Image: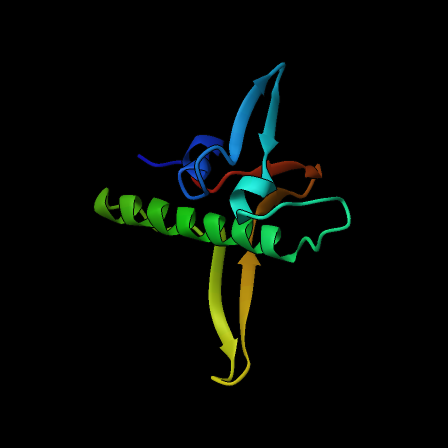
Length: 112
């Protein structure tokens, strides 16, 4: 079954956008994800939107697999278009359960 892994996320982004570089490190290459030449002064909007769109697509894929396995869907990342036809906007939601005793140090993967 599909999980919320970096490997699965890499399939939703441009080839090479996520790479394991060793020593417990992953590299997210926004240059490849956005197909733009980037500097530290480049707007981060397009890269962040690409990442959120990939997370939303991965959540949809996970939910399709869960439905086929007679499991309930998860809530993680979603996107919708809001606004008007003349001024559309993307709206993203990311939901993650937390252990209230440890809060952000112990986030729960909804697929576990």
